[in-house]
Length: 230
Image (cartoon, rainbow, N blue to C red; front, side):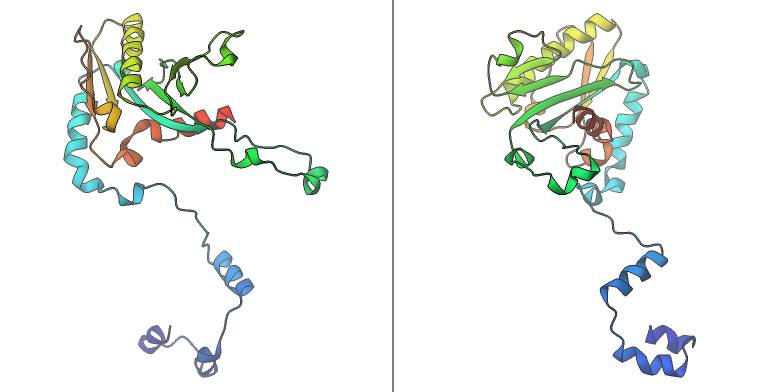
């Protein structure tokens, strides 16, 4: 501030004299930030580290490829972890002070979801879940409302993803006989060679370390799936 004042004076002599002794308390700083229109923002994800300019040529090639397909036949898929036991608690305002938490508030029991849909959102590929149990008890007396795979760590691996790929091909053939484009990231299990024996589905992988910006499923879709679950 002193350097700016030296260029163009905007402080009185008494204000300049008092500057070295000025100490702002926390409440003053909060009020100053509020009056100045500043807001505290929690920064999350890795989008800030993505080199969007450097990736533009590769992304443009994918855009050009997408333009060759009917929008209804362009699909995107991604996977995500879900801490399925961590649910929100709702209590009445008058009982909020007496509410007590439990260990489930920090439960780490996890399953993996495969989420996929077409570009226009008119065709939703059945939601797929990967759990640890081969035959979960919850499915014994109730019909499955999603596609279920088992893996000892409830994670996606090459074997499980190959099963999803077969399911996806069957689903596509039940919807259309036209050419289909599937866009996904290039993480380990997805990096396996995916071949459609009927040459109907073409797979294209996004460049490394850019899904936080260019992965459509990461743009609200997966967040909404989790929000609706909770």
